[in-house]
Image 1 (cartoon, rainbow, N blue to C red):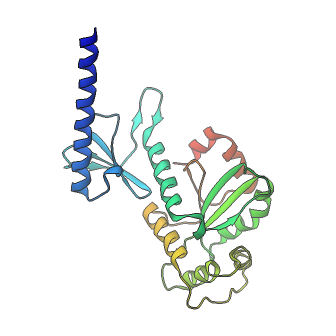
Image 2: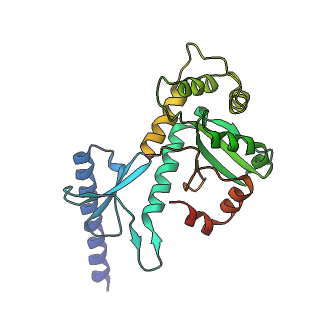
Image 3: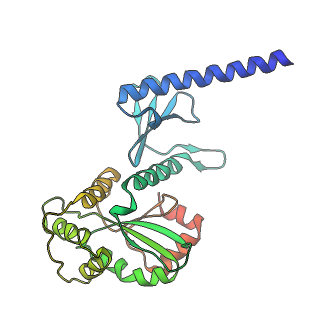
Length: 242
């Protein structure tokens, strides 16, 4: 019995060492951090995390695929879970210092949403108008800039002016009402660049893009009451997002 246990332990160690060798080789081949490569439940298939996105590669590094990896028994969407974790890790790397925060008065918010927003987006303005109501319902909103028209456009300049304002919250609320925000001069546009790069890596084009505290994406505007209903119902949220 002791010999059998020893053999099983050695086998487990060998399998683990082999997996580590493959992940290290794939990381070098793909020029990514070894921590961004991990084995999947499918033999010979590895997950590669690329910022907020994921893809799968074969152990020999010759083939890659994008898509949903679903466990048929039970219907678990492994890819959706992996993407959610990747988004949250990327958002954490951006940091709240590069966001505009609207926090409810309660000590622990009911839900926390990270929102990619564009000053010139009508639906973003509707969501901005809903912000006080959402805060009253216990929702925390963390806004990231995503001027969809790109660098050196009027939307970009407005975003920089808002994110560089001494009072970002007041500047954002004013801009979303259509008021003119004084242009920024000599300002560090890093927060806007980070939000824009995040949106590009997510491959999104419309706004707002709402990301839940669980990493799920809600694409587009949803009225406050319906949004909270979705957030409170994980099953409905999973069906409504990727």
